[in-house]
Amino acid sequence: MDDDYVIESFRRTQDQSPDFVVFTGDWISYRDERQLDQLRRVLAHIPHGRLGTVGILGNHDYGPRWRMLEVADEVSHIAEQAGVVMLRNSTATISGLKFIGLDDFWSPRFDPAPVLAQHTAESLRAAKAEPTIVLCHNPDAADEPVWGGYEGWILAGHTHGGQCKPPFLPPPELPVRNRRYTAGEFGLAGNRRMYISRGVGHLLRVRFNARPEIPIFTLRSEA
Image 1 (cartoon, rainbow, N blue to C red):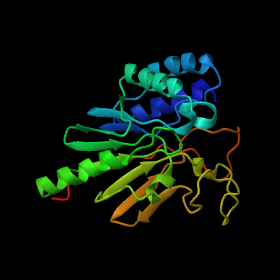
Image 2: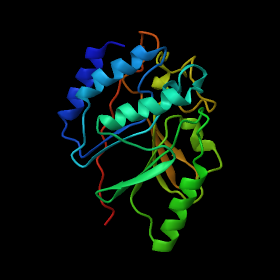
Image 3: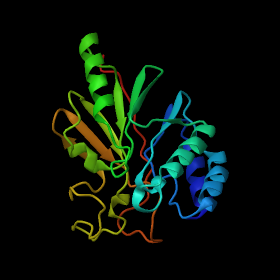
């Protein structure tokens, strides 16, 4: 991808004066050390939320075959140096909003059950769940039997919206098991909802009927 395009996307995001900025993974597509140097340069322009900036890893952050743990650790470290709270099967509460970040579904470190169970237990003790958002790169994770009593929103990415989508037909190439998970909003079991962003990245330099996207959400109190 062209660095200037990513940096311009960052600038346009910052211009929205967001309270929170979240990244749902695939910071790089790793081939060698040059991508790590490139990431450092680009993240010098990263947008930050007024209250917080949170991120998770995607499958490409684990290198070829999604198994290079040392690459994932370095990507996470670089993002943290740029001011991102990186969540890897862990939580962070910022200004009253709780984020649960899952490690990538295809990675060796996908283990969401303990952190989701802890969230459920804490919610039961408090008699009312904290406002919570889950960040999950691959939407297929939403179908795994790990969610316990979690109710609320899941923000995902990974699909690029199929990248090339014929009108009125599903995308011919989609990197998910559940073929309905293309892009946009989905109702799930257990009073959960998921939004899959098309993102701004790509593997092939082509998009058709799947425009790049940086979603903006407005959070409102239920009171």
